[in-house]
Length: 106
Image (cartoon, rainbow, N blue to C red):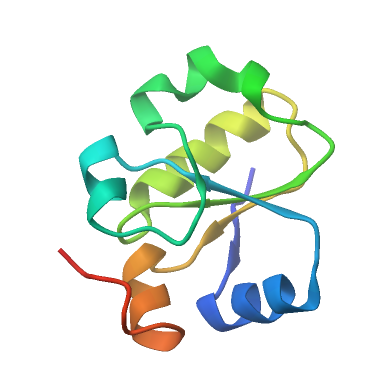
């Protein structure tokens, strides 16, 4: 199964347009407190136990610091029957670089 990616600029455009996207932040809580873009926080180690909090019919964009954890999250979600999921290419760092420099890197 391949993992779809969305780039920061496209995500920003789709959010601005009002597309119904669910941002799933799979970083740890302390990272989320340092900087976030308003995603719903479920740290990757907890994701398998908290799938009931997600809607299988909604488009989900997973994000982390730089990408690897959100790819793992997308793979897990796909195995559990989530079909409309993608990862934010480059994570919150890419968002900071290409969309909003006020989002802190750490």
